[in-house]
Amino acid sequence: MADNSFSDGVPSDALEAAKNASNTEKLTDQVMQNPQVLAALQERLDNVAHTPSSYIETLPKAVKRRINALKQLQVRCAHIEAKFYEEVHDLERKYAALYQPLFDKRREFITGDVEPTDAESEWHSENEEEDKLAGDVKNKVVIAEKEAATAEEPNPKGIPEFWFTIFRNVDMLSELVQEYDEPILKHLQDIKVKFSDPGQPMSFVLEFHFEPNDYFTNSVLTKTYKMKSEPDKADPFSFEGPEIVDCDGCAIDWKKGKNVTVKTIKKKQKHKGRGTVRTITKQVPNDSFFNFFSPLKASGDGESLDEDSEFTLASDFEIGHFFRERIVPRAVLYFTGEAIEDDDNFEEGEEGEEELEGDEEGEDEDDADINPKV
Image 1 (cartoon, rainbow, N blue to C red):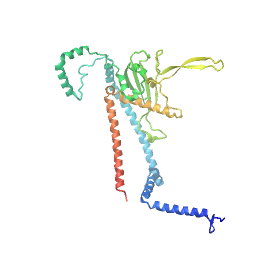
Image 2: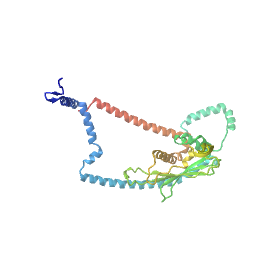
Image 3: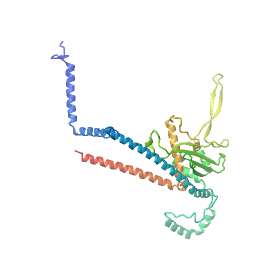
Image 4: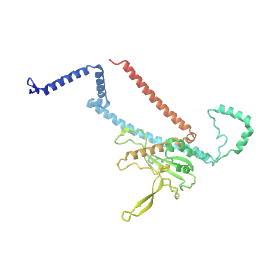
């Protein structure tokens, strides 16, 4: 039988390899002659070549030295900015004292300790003319019925469940409230913000004032948020103003059997030796808004928190900031829902802008397809 592994003294494997190499070279030549492929490759090369970091690396040492000097100036700017925010905090403290008499009167109207005068309770709505016309017609037609209804109409004290209604209206808060929290929150009479004193580390305290109730003996529950307004030494360019870095709650003096932050469970245990079974009871944590006053502590020993803990702490900081910046200053608008509608409209406006930007980008891409660069 003839041996086919050689042809004219050349191994068949070598011939096959040479043939494949030739085909590969032809294919490469064909691909590289394709203008679309060349354009795509050039675009990728351009993107790599023009990244900021790669550009900086190409600069002469003398220029890099000057850039380092600019960075030092930027750090000094960050420290000046930190001082600016410290003075803003002082201004907030100053104006908080001016707001407080108005907030005190708000509390008196809510609790019913003081009845507003006719002048204080007068308010002109956007639909005032329509309301006036409808009121005149109604007065002419059913004046007698109206007087009788007015006489029978209930007149509760103050504005019942004012703060509890805000908790229900605001999603960020309602998500924290359990059904068994609701009767307790109905006793909430006021929420105040107190700023740290001059010369003290930057912080603010949320005070939740409760009327006497069947659940705990505290008249005030507090949550303190500690803030930092200085650039991080390791990353000074990340500074964007004061940030909450930690928070402290308070002890709630629950009355017997009223602590909603724990629940009692029963568990059966079997003795290994005797085989007898006994039932034990123990308390375990329970979901509740009032866990808000027993927050996680930010890690201060250099150890990092796990992802879930970091998320919980960030959410806590966000809620504290929302109470301070939105809920307390504009409480009546969150009670009526007007502030919530404004927030929703603002968010929808932002989404609309993002969609518009996306559409514009799409138009640019279409133009590029129609009019490719030569």
